[in-house]
Amino acid sequence: MTYLIAGLIIFFGVHALPMRPALRGRMRERLGDLGYKAAFALVSLLGLVLIIHGYGMARAAGSPILYSPPVWMSHITMLLMVPVFVLLVAAYAPTGTVKARSKHPMILAVKIWALAHLLANGDLASVVLFGSFLAWGVVDRISLKRRGDIGGAGALRKSIAGDAISVVVGLALYAAFVVYLHTWLIGVPVI
Image (spheres, rainbow, N blue to C red):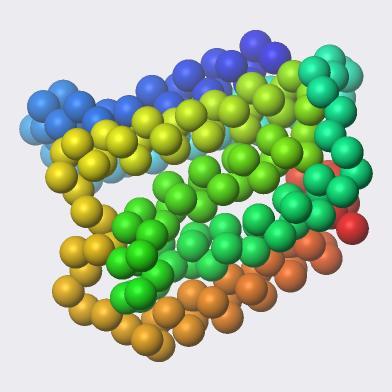
């Protein structure tokens, strides 16, 4: 559990920098734009590696059960995950409607992903992992709103083709995760 918590602290610590524009600006001045982005990516990757390793270790060691979700909750989780993949693709695609409606598709995807997994997993390691991501998503969204960042709602170029691509590619990724990728990457079969 130590690696998981350390990874979460590192990952969210670096992701909290944009919430502090003055500090972020000073770091960009010192490191340059490319240096800042490289440092941000490397520290994020370190945190992510520790999170994945720590979560795997905690699960393998038999993380204590805090609650036992009913079996049908996994069906709710699968349903909630459908828009997650569409939103993840939309975060990087030149979409109009999806970004305009969700404002920040990546953050919304993370919040839905975390909530969905909290519904299906009641062990301590899962609650720490998914609860942390859900809390970060809420805090980050509030921070963006306070900073006046309207996200995709301010996109000037809207693309129906981009929306269609987000839906089609998102659904394909969802199907791939359900059938194969979740088991291969996470080690837990979905179906």
